[in-house]
Amino acid sequence: MKNRFWILLLPALMAQITFSQSEGLTSSPYSLYGLGTINQTSIGISNGLGHSGIGLKQETGINNLNPANFALVPQNSFFYDIGIKGELNHYNNRGDGESKTTLNFSNLAFAFRITEGLGAGVTMIPYSDVGYSLLGLSSNIEGSNESFESNVYGLGGLSDLSINLGYSLTESLRLGFTGSFLFGNIEETESFVISRSYLELTETTNYSGFRIGFGTHWDIGQNITLGGVLKLPVTLNGNLTRTVAKILDGEEIVVVDAEADNDVSDFKLPMELGFGISARLKDSFTLTADYRKSFWDATHQSEHIGTYTDQDTYAFGLQYLNNQRAYKYWKRIGYRAGFNYDNGYLALNNQKIDGYTFTAGLGLPIGVFSNSMINLSYGYSSKGYVQNILVREKYHTLTVNLSLEDLWFKKRKIN
Image (cartoon, rainbow, N blue to C red; front, side):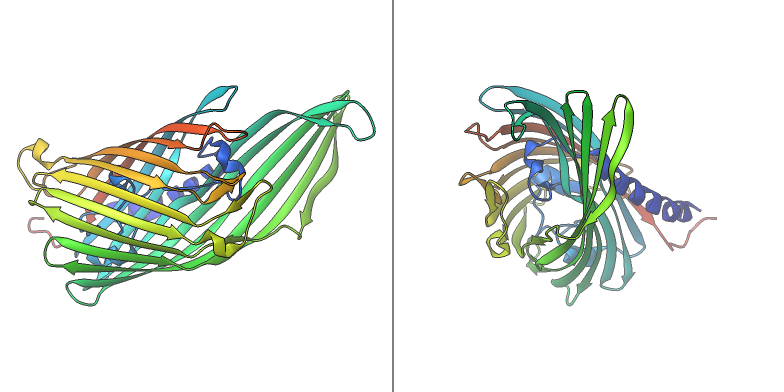
């Protein structure tokens, strides 16, 4: 009965995460460009390890950074991971500053073993987030000396629904495959007030596409694991719907009702390549290090005032876990810290928008003989510059992941 409950609950949670994209998962001004800000939030323990884990060998939870790790799901185990993410953003330019908060789901995932050496899983995470507002934009009325002000709001983002397979070729070598369906929409609303008239223009751009990726894990001895991932480039199909409404003397008049525009450009995602290593030191320490490169130059895309350039990301993490099966509770707690540096994929006025993140985390176990755990992580990040039109963004992130293990098809010793 318990297992059936989870099977019924998971589709509802997935629908909730998809719906929550329309409510905004970010308030970053840099989400104005392209598909919005690319999400770095991972699943389980990786959030506390600087979002590293390509080479992390994890047998007690879900590692979505490398599909090869799904081969390690233990027999009779069924893993669930549900995440919530909150952000406090503060950004400022030369003249002003502002703070905003957001709270929403960050992920949903589950994994299970199919047969000896073969595991599978499904993950659902936000791929990109959009949530910006531009207030009091002043424009001149053509043919006159008068001007008007407008407000622009952007909301939405893309979701990533992935099916993952991991297979053990040998005890030390594992391969992985992932197929990702990317979908979502970005809605931009611009409102004008001219004399006694109010005009509102809403443009909704829908994107969708399918992406393929691969991963590998190779154990070197008992304590070192190397990992590699590859995501192939993909073109997301885009279509735009435009609605224009006018309010005059309190009466609303629909000027254009859901007009489709087939001229909207598709969006290209680049090939991504990543390498990682994890090393176990003195039984209690685990060190992780990742390098990822996204080949944005090959997409030949640009914004109004910027271009997409190749991106390099470096991530490091360290975990201390005394004994996961110890009798004393404090010895079963995992302590984590990490660092992440991203040199940016967007250059505005020839200035790349880079950023860094410091993370810390705790793994609080639930029960002695179960792999269930509450993973808490905190991150402090900085992004951008106070220069010309650029904005420096500083934000605090708190992520809570409920990582659960359920045992299926295990014969009871006592009825």
